[in-house]
Image (cartoon, rainbow, N blue to C red; front, side, top):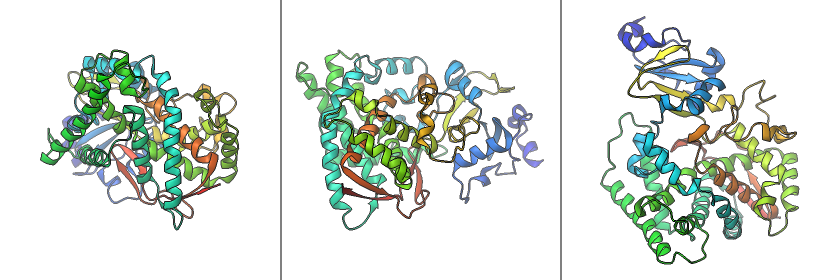
Length: 456
């Protein structure tokens, strides 16, 4: 083959692995160009055709594609010292700043993750304290949404991004951030998303990006200064609690961590909520179960009651299983040395793609996997397959599982419970779920889905 001869040195370590036949000069890139299937669907199809491990080629670059739970467990959980997280680190360092644990490795990752407010023992108190303020904010948004959608349905994803941003603002710094800060956040996220799909992103943002980042971080810094000036006040936002518990992060890093709250959830959370509402709207019998359960909650339900609402929990889990917002993850072999893995000797810095899209839809682990069946989580299944387990890891697995996973689940449950107690939400009526679907900031987003909301 011409491809094998031209790329002989790169090809040799993967010669014994199955995979789609590469064609010179594209490799397997044509599988992704101009096709109706999204990249994660293509990688999942490789699992169906070639098994739990195979090699695919994007032009002359090999990618080890994993659709096997044990091998994925090795990379993400058991052999983490042999691999590192490259994506989206290189692209996002200029956006998130180097202090973000999401884009660090080694000792610096250990330091930033250990000191992150999200990993502190008081984090449960923070969640409980958010209930009242965030619920009030959400109810105000639902009232406005009712007016907005009185005449016609409107695209839901973009609107939920702003609702999530406002709610996360209350949780992070104690008040809703300005329209300008949201605009700056979206500008930075857009630049980060473009960098993530660039083959060679520049080491720094352009002039507009740098000035936007400076303004956004300065805005967060002002909240830090206000909170640190009154450390004994009673606010229960994340920043105030971190200061009151003597966070070891310096001012710039702690303020930046508040910004990372938005980058970590303001796209994946709305995507999951749109998916959950779409599925419930498409399955009225399942929607009735959830509505009845959340209406049985007391008006001032607490965190324990929210988490104990099984129909709500099962409906959300099933949406995250069937339509995960993050459908694939990336790792690399350490840049300093090769490693023995998956039956071959992978070269240093070898690229690995992990496809949770397939495993979360795999038989026999998930009977009738393409059906939306929240009740599949009953009978102890939810405990047997918690978030981050072999066949259910929409927010990652192992020590690098999403830092804000607990908060995002809390917020999504609170959003759905608050909405469905008093409003009927018609989501995606007459629409194909794939309409207008995009991939932005590492998240699969159903941008085309429209919704209407009416008070019950």
